[in-house]
Every structure is written in structure tokens, then in C-alpha cells.
Length: 191
Image (cartoon, rainbow, N blue to C red):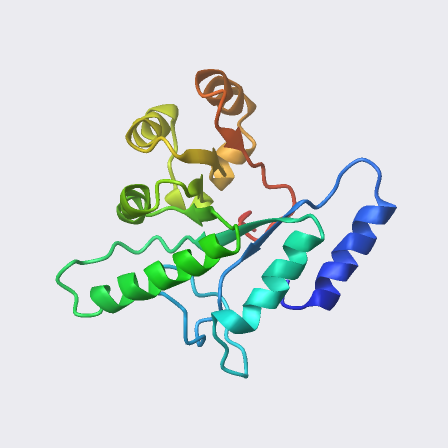
């Protein structure tokens, strides 16, 4: 949510629904934010230029109201270490992660194995929530990734696997300590 008012609307929805609840909020900064790292999947631009401090109060408010918070670093783009811009991107990423950590936020949704490796090496206390943008299609692919990175705590299966109940049953049996988020009514569902 982009405002406290929107968070209050979610609280109102939760108060009226009995069988489910919205408990977790995702966020990444707009593309034109001064603190946009380049590891986010840029999905929106605001008319006004912001920075992390602009969003900090909204993030804190959502947490005060009991919502879990996950920052989206889910760009699937592979980064090139020879790129002149990578040093700046990593500096911005480190600044962002330290600010999130200072607020008690230690969960990020990612899909790029290079970024996951960087996070595991430099921020081992952060929990990784694997994005549907990873686009893995079978248990072997997930097994390889889970064996490489022990701080993956959750994943969202791709659109095709989201409704493959045999796959979901088998992967849950193989990895009982890794949560699965199922898409119900989400923009990631094709069509």
C-alpha cells in the first residue's frame, strides 16, 4: 500500500472477513525513487520523486498494525560484474538492506540466484522468499536452489505449478520447512 489510508482499508477488510485475513504486505520503491536499487522489478513511477525515508513511516505503520512486510527485490535480470553501474547498485542495495534491518524488516522476495547468493553471503540473517519470477518448473530445479541457499523460507510456484496439486503435495513433503505461497487472485496469474 502506498498510504496509511490504504492500510486502514485493509484493516477494515480484515475486520469484516471471517475465513481469511490479509497478513502480509509487499513493497518496492517506484522506479523514479532516489533509493531505487535496480534489483527491484520496476513496476510503477510516481509523479513526485521519493526516497526510502518517504516510505519509512508507511512501512512502520503497516508493521505497527500487525502486518508482515516483505521487500521486493524480484527483478529476474542477471547482473554483469563488469557493468559500470553494478557498484552503485550494490551500494544502494546495501544502504536499503541496512535501513530495512534497522526497522526490524529482514524479509525479501527475490528470484535472481546471483542476488540470492549476495544476500546469503552478506546478509545471512535475512530470510529469502523466492519469487514466481524464478520460473522453475520442477522439483529438481527447486531442490538444487534450496540446497545452495539455506535461508530460503518460502516460494511462490509459477503459474503452471500453482494449480498442480501433485507437484505441491510432493514438494511440500520433500521440503516441509519451506512455506509455499499460492496465488489466488493476483496479477502474476497469466490471463
